[in-house]
Length: 291
Image (tube, rainbow, N blue to C red; front, side, top):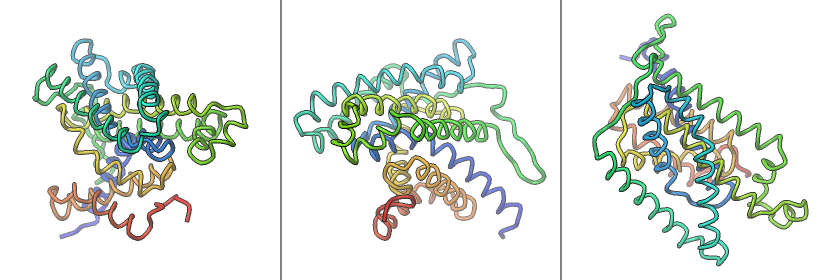
């Protein structure tokens, strides 16, 4: 029987889950939506961020969120280096469509195998004072292991939106896939713009990975579970729309929460793919896409 208490708790849980999904999908929204780079390896970088958080948390007791923020510049450098390789190997020769996809697909498995060789296939988790505690507001339950990642993801998304809308480089990133010639006439180098954009996208994976390991234990192959879900979020939100990605993530999080609460958690993973198919069929430009 559906009660008001159960209904509202499902909504709140979905909002927090959706906030986390936004953090995971943010980087892909930049690479896939704005750069036309199908970085299928993005969830694996998220898992890499999880294991960085795990190592430092276990050895030094540092808060996972702080670790994710501190390592964002390191992941940014990884992203810019990755684009240099991608550009020289594929984009410059016009082979980025299929060969580029194969490149990221191979990169995904290389990172995953290296993590397995280093950490094995056992699940790893972190510790923090707030993990395991719950805030109670009336009959609403807000577990901190979900609330903290949702708030951190919202702040990161807001920061990226501000950067994209208020800075010259941010506006250049938004324009690079729309009108490359006009961008060059404005004095911007499209190659440099894409390099910075991919750096930002991979940097978001550092914090997203730290948030993931707060929510649940991780092992190297967990990232595969998020590939279809985050592509669905990016497409649903509208290609290249950061705010649309956030709204779509919240929507999918709430729908998944309802499905898990009232029909069982085994049905929840199918939500992302179902919404993706419906979006492609009836509104392929997404919620915030251009008609």
